[in-house]
Length: 321
Image 1 (cartoon, one colour):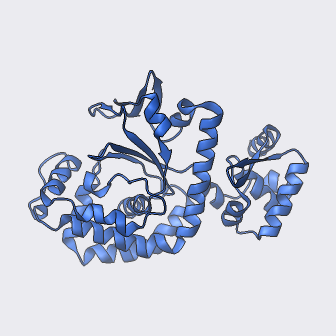
Image 2 (cartoon, helix red, strand yellow; image 1 turned 120 degrees about the horizontal axis):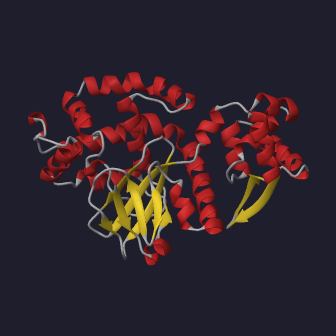
Image 3 (spheres, helix red, strand yellow; image 1 turned 30 degrees about the horizontal axis):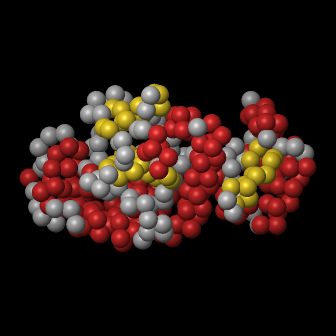
């Protein structure tokens, strides 16, 4: 079991950040493993896998690099640089950090991910450039066309997580952030169940980075920054899954779809993106659901957010039984 020591000051300074590179890296892992967590992800893979495989077939060295970089229990660190925390960062700026990796450091990172000798074909000086070029391709062809929608989903997740921290504290929020991660108390955070050295983050800057693809990892750098990348709470999964039949029969399919999504805090615009319904329709459904006591409204900064009430949770749970 690997644990991090996280003092109160670190938690106070920690924050949620978005990273285009983390999203592209999660997408690359999904393309490499060709496995989907839900129907929407399967559709995305079916759309992009042929071109991805053609790209790697034309570049065998990069194909071997990808296979070595994503090990069974560890990623090659140079492929997952820690975000700087800057707002609205461009992926090109994040990739510049990767491109600047010393070639010897890249080979050393690969020895950790493959847990053994690095294949002779990968003892070369251009590994960081090759990795960055591939991630730029993944971003351009598979993520950027849908980044607006993905970003709104990620922002909704951040708002919901921040609301949970405000309501219940960091312990419950960290317990549900990623598989096998648990708040143990006394400043100890279980990161995973692997037998890796513990780390002391006292005084460090800690970022929580959501991605829409169902992969997670951790990273740190020489500047006192650490990051936990985690899959956002099932917004994409729920959007691709129809509401319970009984709920749709009771409320109508479109209104039921809105209620089913509100297990977490979402804004009207985010509901529009997730449901594909018009803004006026979503607003009308929210008014009816609020009048019925199934949905409540609150404010987080400048955002107006909606969430199911306990009565709404009970109704959805009963129709799923």
